[in-house]
Image (cartoon, rainbow, N blue to C red; front, side, top):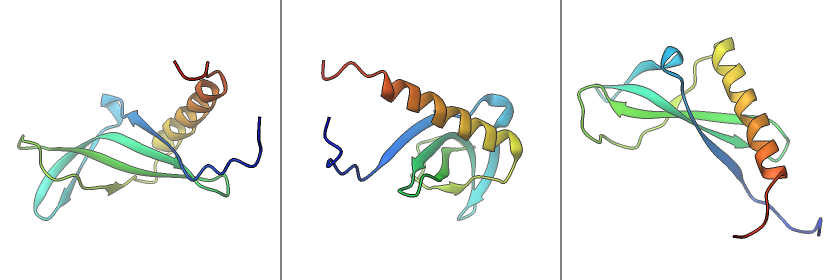
Length: 95
């Protein structure tokens, strides 16, 4: 295995459990946030944005929202990153 390989990004998508979902508004339209995009930054920290669907239905715009500073969401993000790390470590190569 070569340590010279440069990885520019690691990202995962995580479904937000129903009990942790929230609603936010952008440009006058309310969205229910259902998915997190979690990225591993070069310095080892995690960054997350939330995405969802308009409350009124339809596709709506692909707009990111900040993740509220709540312990339950921080735990979800940390657990998802740890799970993703285990899955990556156990990969079986190209199919």
